[in-house]
Image (cartoon, rainbow, N blue to C red; front, side, top):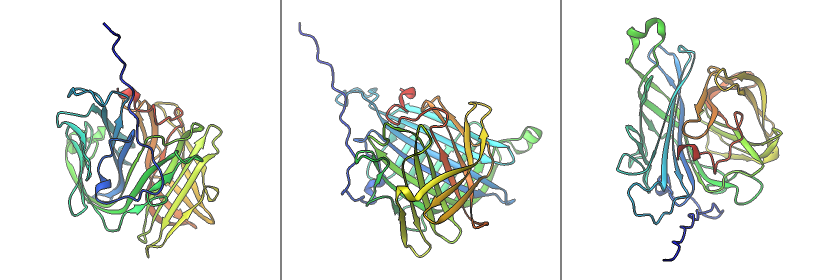
Length: 362
């Protein structure tokens, strides 16, 4: 009897320039790539004019399992979901996370159009481009409709978004800023009046930002994490900026894109972009220090970010093996409020290696 051959690990598709994104097909899943996410964030206003921040993200992560395995139970793809609500009245971000292997119509990410699901959580895109988003968590719930008001903001060079000095350190990436939000949320209950407001949905409206990104080798080996901003500005313009950090905190790569209210797009090279910490906050749970207030530089322009509340840490070590800060921020320029956005700070709790970050869920 011969020794059975070991299955070779799958070969994931690489990101290369010169492949323009095609809509709506590229809003769907790309299972030939290792990692992919659909990421929606935004600011909401309640009927009593109290601001809330929300975030919901679906990850699709391909594993090293043999793709030729015909078993329905084969863990070739994982679906991971994070959701969060930032409520100043509650005093901190509340969040939930889920993880499951794809299959049985309970967890999936389908191609050709956005349709991702994990148990009762889902994000789907209709033929007219609007999204339906739902997440029922223990302390809160999101039931939202996100409706486009602008064309997609295709990042980088026709969607090829470089994240490091080498050509392969890149993703395919587009954003949908200035999404109009309607729906309802169930807010977390404060202990003093838990019985009065528990499980009472609040009607909300607001503005959101959606990112869709996929890659097989996103980060340089020298990178430990990133600072990222997506901001909807009050005049209808949109700003995206990121800085991929090395161990010393200096930039391995950086980039920004600003589309003004008339639709004119300006992009900024790595030496024109920086995130400069202005104030830090230490997590009482992970002891991690995050720069929750920052100044973002895009050439001669400066944007000041201030968090809706300091405690917006996502402790997702149970699904991705890491904790990160992801929160609603106001955007100021020359001392004036000019918009609202979301700031993401990864790699501060532990160095982030995207190729390994999903292993805790397997």
